[in-house]
Image 1 (spheres, one colour):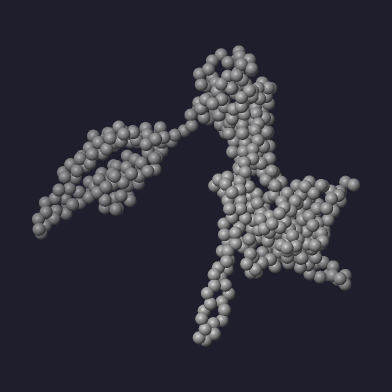
Image 2 (cartoon, rainbow, N blue to C red):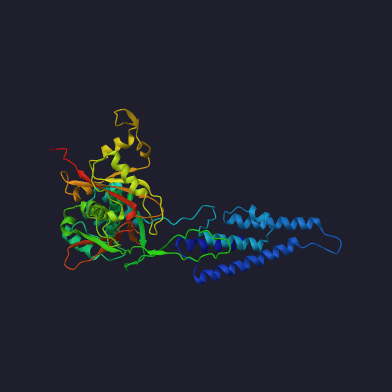
Length: 503
């Protein structure tokens, strides 16, 4: 009797788990009723096996032992039915009722009941979900996207055209006679499924496009994130700069009998920040469907996602090149800011040492010394070889043409050289003067910050609909803002002309 009751409880929990839900009101009522019956049976068994004659002076030891054995058997039966180790409950000296309650709470909390054979009940993907995953990865493979672990069956489907995949998808949902229809008719059917949440084909396209643009975003070749700070804003309103609290006043000597002077802390307002939305739209057209142009849903999303990062990269480098007026009304690199060399140079020991000195002698907003260690050199393509030689040569020629220690050799691991062709392009290319920059690393100051909406730095993809457009349309958009937070974080060398290696 008890075993059947426990089995029914397990069935209720299994059914709820398989459906991915909690117990219904009716199921919970039945579950509680069964629990009450089990408790009643347990009390009856305990009364029969555990009652011992006791008076003020004597106890039946055998009866006590039998009662404990009965408790252990009951606990082992309960735990065994659900595949749970019984020892922890036996050793805790808890009653059978207490153990039963603890076991049921554990099962419901974990939502992973066991069947009577002791194996975990798992909710597996249905056949259509598996087909969707395999079809999406098949399109990516066919479009030339390299996947480390494509879904099972993806390689078998990679030879199918978009038309074939639609026919297979619709057939799985009950459509018949599709093979005799023209590709144009099939495209019209696919369009009608556009916003149908149960339709397979649009879901396959969505999954393909999503994976493609994620791969493109990861593969984007940019460098801005190696010397800027990532920030987060929660909305699109102008985030007025917070206030930076200054240091406490220096302690002053208090002569005998004199009063201690009162002082107040200063503060300064930091720059404001704001997000903007950037996006693009692309379409799998009717012609592309009929022509089986898979590249439109594999390569194109990847290129747009890559473009998002490259747009940010260009915006950051335009700040370096254009030298805009910043929050204090002065251009970013200015003699007032003590962060620009008077004369531009190429890669020389003297120039690098001067820039390290300028960076390291900056003061904070209150005139106090701060420590800014040189961390990055940002340079156009064409100077990297010279920097490598400068930092990795242990000995150099002195004025007297004798070998001397290279003072920059110790920075060979501390300073990262970042070359980016965007600088070359923004400056006009070879034959034009190109600046380079020393960026510092410090907790006391920032340089450029790139903010994202709620910290999300990957584009959002959304299937859209446009009146009069023959095709599946997707929007790709990302919210970000780029701003200078503190001029103290970098020093500019106006640079020199880089000759073309091909002239």
